[in-house]
Length: 250
Image 1 (cartoon, rainbow, N blue to C red):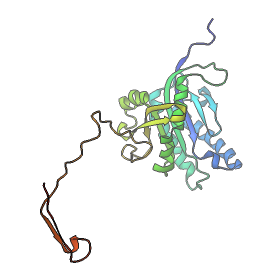
Image 2 (tube, rainbow, N blue to C red):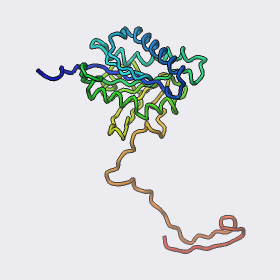
Image 3 (cartoon, rainbow, N blue to C red):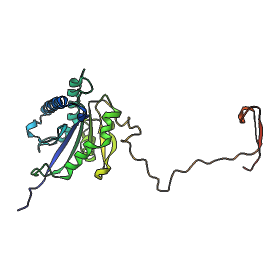
Image 4 (cartoon, rainbow, N blue to C red):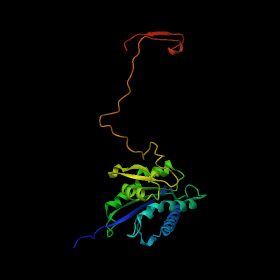
């Protein structure tokens, strides 16, 4: 008999609250309650009841393994816009400390559902690395300070779901390198922010794509010219009223 059961292919979601640790204890308690309520309401709208989600709570968010009948298309296309709508209503008129802003990561892969201390599987590690990637954190903190939610999806999710069904416009996603060097993690992923064009906003920052590599060396420099028999005077020379004459080969 094998020591563990066969893995199952599932959709995985990781969600984190921005700046959770900066809140005092009462605010942390309050936003945890409100976070759960917002997630429950969003899931109910999508038709994926929360009791069916296998959840691993983290205090400032959660890792969730969705049930086998959860549709990837409905989830990827609708979860982030739904969360955005709920958060816009929740955050209206609140102080910065009271607002809830979420980072969301979506991936899919094989998962062991009978782990002794969580859900073993490379897919779980990947979605947790995506949610912690600086490029996603930077999207909320710096690039889109008014956004309520930012989404990052793995390359397979973007290719198989976003591009084929286009419930979210593929051209509004930015191709990024999600990396955590201290975790030896670096993967291509895709960033999306509701009501924003993340692709157009790809200014020089953590989300930019690496510059192209030129196999033959650096780009050729433009040719230079040498001039001869140049006569300058007046303001063209250092000082006033000076005159200098250059003579040399071209």
